[in-house]
Amino acid sequence: MSLKKYVLDFYLSFYELIAHKRIQKKDISERYIHAHLVSMLTTGVLMWSYAFVACFTISNPIPGIVGIIASSIHLLSPFLYLRNNNYMFNTNVMIGAGIIHQMTFAYFTGGFDSNVLIWLGILPMLAGVMAGRKGATLWAIITTLSIFVFMLLKLSGYKFPFMISEMGLVVAQALILFGWVFIASIVIWVHIFLVEQNASMLEAAKQRTQNLVNVLSHDISTPLSVIIVKLNQLVKSPLNEAQLSATTKALKASERVQEITDSIKELRLTEMGKKEITYSEVIIRELILELKDMFSEKLEHKNLKFHWSAGSEVYSFSSSKSLLLHQILGNLLSNAVKFSERDNEIRLRVSRVENFIQFIIEDSGLGIPSDMRETVFEANLSRSSMGTDGEIGTGFGLPIVKGCVDRLGGKISFESRTASEGPSGTRFKLLFPIS
Image (spheres, rainbow, N blue to C red):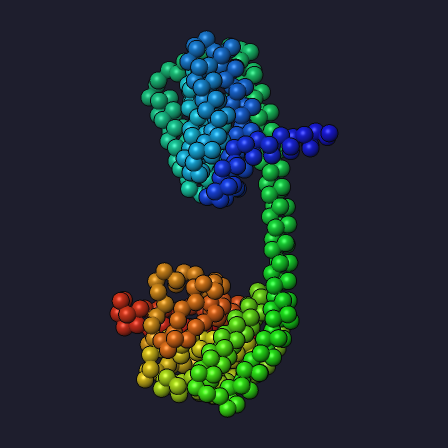
């Protein structure tokens, strides 16, 4: 058995021992447990080395006793995951044991002048690896305050004890030099391993997504189209009231599934940058009239008035008419219609702002809830909201809009209010560069 395989088998066995309950309950990301275990194994050798140096080369017994207790807590800290899933608490236990050990050793070996204090710099890094930004921030503050206290004592004239032997000083210095090389090497190795593992996982996820898109494109879309055609024929044939109602419901459900599959395909193509872009001169008036014509039935159904205006300075500009009409303005107007009450109005204004063409689509509809505004451009099928007339969306419209706007080098922003915040409505602003 090779050394690499032996080490890996040992690590995986140890990991299984401490993580099996969390894996069964699925109540924490395994990343946190891996990070804790690797950090403990990496720094554990140094913890025990300093503990033994303190026992045998420092004349006062306190650093040795504290070192052994702290090193034991440090060693056993991963086993906390057998009892809880609180990675922040478990991280603090391990890092806390480390700082107590280091500060005690430093106090009895010169205080602020002790070279052991340099190890405090590694604590925020370890806390960040183990508990994320919150852990790194907390321990950056704690270590900074600890160093500051030692510095104030030094400046006030306090005489720190210096009880380490000459040999102990040499060993402590060697631990710093070789320890930093060891830890830096391990950290880089783990980083490279995680990057490679993450790249493999992303590639696998990408392939699964592509397979799903292929299924939607061919295996589902084709038979679904046949079903919709046949249901349309049935709806137009002589049926009694119950049959017509059931067939109409089946048709609407099938069209809903087709809408979702089409949206997923569009979103995927947009994200992959494979949505072909053909630039041409887009005449603003023709674009808006075509957009209005596309939605004439839906506007008429809810008795919505569509007002538009375009300044004389924006007759035309170079862009992709297909993306503008069907994916960007089409999706935004579709949402405006969907969330507007009957007998209301929707406004579209086009103007030139410096070197940009600006589109503003504004409605007085339901508005976007405050808890959805930050993630409104992220694809989420479960977040789809029902319209004022019972319309059901896919949750992919705005992510597609954002992706297409980005592809055209534009910018998108919005303001929205619900009825509880004042007059409800949503206002989207689009800016496209004039080439």
